Image 1 (tube, rainbow, N blue to C red):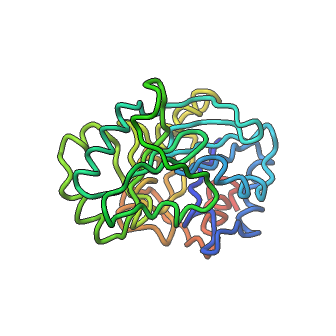
Image 2: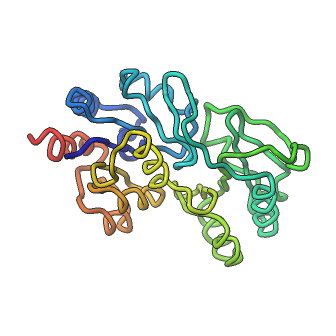
Amino acid sequence: MIKLIALDLDGTLLTDDKQVSPENKKALQDAIQQGVYVVLCTGRPIMGIQSIIDALELPEHNDYVITFNGGLVQRATTREILAMHPHTLDDVRYIYETLSAHDLPMNAIDLEKVYEPTYPQNNPSLYPVIIKNLTFERREFDSFDDTHTFVKAVCCCPEDRLDCQVSQLPKAFFERMNVFKSRTNLLEIMPKGIDKAFGIAQLCQLLNITMAECMALGDEANDMAMLQAVGYGVAMGNATQHVKAVAKYVTGTNMEHGVAQAIEKFVLNK
């Protein structure tokens, strides 16, 4: 029996114009009526998904969200932090130095802002271009107190440049960090071992639910871990082939209300 549904947003719950379809909303509300937890599971911070939370009208007893790719578990209504696993300042300095050495721009994000250090010459970050609803601040990492932490780091630049330069990064970088793409032009860097599957596991412990009792839906590389970890891993019809290969099931596309299709089949038994 499925007790928790974990949902990626872009390319999964949301249509191409970033809306929640009436079909998906109804299926989720029907699942909630049956006592199932509905959990948004995203790389974004909570302030970047508030409009989606509002659109779903999640009840206060069912308002858990997993943000920053599993680095943060919190309540949507109060924003209370239930679990947090951030980068240290040393981590962020290491990421910055490594990426800068390969002419890649980098941003670090804490609970309040996105920080913009000096970028490589002629290679600014595209993150401020693709992310519109966050607060950005120009600031160097040597200006922070040593105890300051960051929930994630990102590298956002043209796809061809990103792919070329990332392939040149040292092996030690990937051994120390959890590195994956969430978009073709966006690389996300999390602390080692932190991903959406980890976030779901943290929440399951709090709710006394097993991973086998969870369903997760996603479409991109940063969803693969959670699709493999839960009892019902569902890839969207528009998911990449790598994601479909690790999923147990494939549903319709995000434009075909694939989330609703999966919920109706596995949760509502229609």
